[in-house]
Every structure is written in structure tokens, then in C-alpha cells.
Image (cartoon, rainbow, N blue to C red; front, side, top):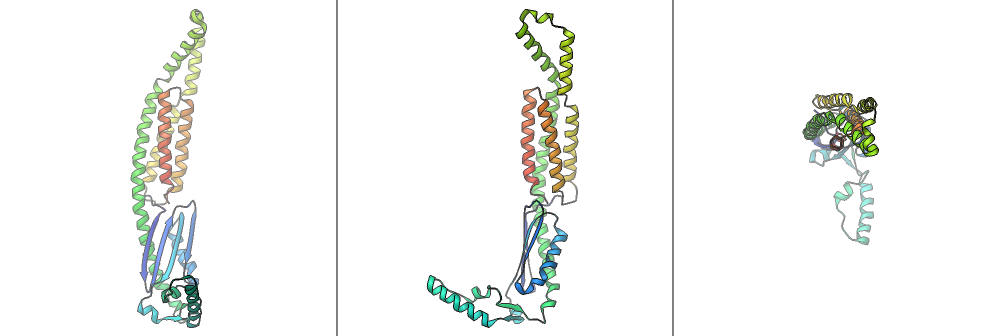
Length: 287
């Protein structure tokens, strides 16, 4: 089941609120924001995300949720708080507005964990990270299911177009023969009957060989089947593989289009390429 790179998860644990947000990105980019006095936990938190994410931009934001029991173990920098209060009060009087204790509480350096408790914070914080990651992963899996459903429907359309291409290609030699004879009649008039029939057939055979798309159709069918197989795999991190396989599908369609001698076949190829582009847009969201 594919997993989207887009998702959101959150958890509250031991007085801390953890939010994890993921968006599309070509590579893996993990950013963690923690209160300044907990900066030593930034790398362990990033490692937890790194273990569970293979691609995408992920932002982790850890903040304090001020419950009573948490306040009891927090050290307030009252001197710095008073300085902030005076400066913010002066700005409020100058420009309008009001200042509350919550405004001051959010400023850096106001709150800090008591030194004796700092090392004890990581285990519960780690549990909160794991809960938030579980919620985050579930959201990505749900979105991945929707992406899979849409891609599978478009793959069914490609399979039908593949059959239409086979049918349209069957009459290419006859169409080229009629086109060549008509052109000779137009150029030579009554003398067209004197043209060497063997030479004409050789020309038709040469063109038939150049425009034969049997191999391309076989490979195209194989690529589509392989693509569906990867979509159905339990591995959630398949975005890169799918992107590469779409390149192969598009390459075969380009070759078929260049060999086409039939307008009907050319139109089918254009429709198929448009469908592939829509699939590519969805694949860009897969981890």
C-alpha cells in the first residue's frame, strides 16, 4: 500500500504538545523545533522520525502545554519576564494593543526545566513522539489509499488504450499501401501502371518494418503490469520506483507515436500520454 508524503499527527504527553506535519519533497528533509532549553533532544527526536520516513519534508514542533503539574517543575526567569513586560508594555502604549502574561510566556528564555528534571524528560517525550508519529503515519497511509485508488483507475484506462493501439496498428500496412499507390497515381497518372510492382512491395515492406510497434506494445504492457504490481506491494515507500517506471512507459509511448502512420493511433497515444501525466502528478505525492 503506497503512503503519501502529506500528513499530520499530534500527541500530548507529560505536559508537552507534539505536532508532526509532512509535505511533498524530492528527498528526505526533517526539521525539529524544540524549546531552547530542550535543544539536547533535537537529534534524538530527528532520529525517531528518520527511522519511519524515507522521503518528504517533515516538520516536528514540540511545545509546552501548561498543565498545573508541569508548572510546578518549571523554573521561571522572573527578571527576564519583567524586562519583557516593560518593553512590550511600552510598545503597546506606543502602537496600541495590550500585553498578557501568555504573550510573555511564549518568549524565549522565560521558562526552563529545573536542572534536576531535564534528563528525566526524554523517556516520556519519546513516548509522545512515538504516539504523534503513529498518528502521522496513519494519516499518510489513509491519503496513500486514496492515491492508489485514483492511480489504479487510470491504469485501467491505460490497459484499454493499449488494446486500442493494437487494433489501430493492425491496418497500418494497408493504409500505407493505399497512400503510396494513390501518390504514385497522382504523380504519374496513366504511367503508374508501369511502375515495378516488386519495387513498390519492397517499399511497403520497408515501411512496415519501420512502423512495426509490436515490441513497443509488448514492453508497454509489461511496464503497466509491473507498475500495478508495485502499487499493490505492501511496501509503503515506492514513490521513486513508480516515477522511474512512468519514465519507461512514457518512452514506449513516444516511440509508438513516432512510428504511427495512422491518425487514430496517434490520437490514442496522445490520450495515453495525458493519462500518464495525471498518474505522474499523483506519484509525486507518494513517499
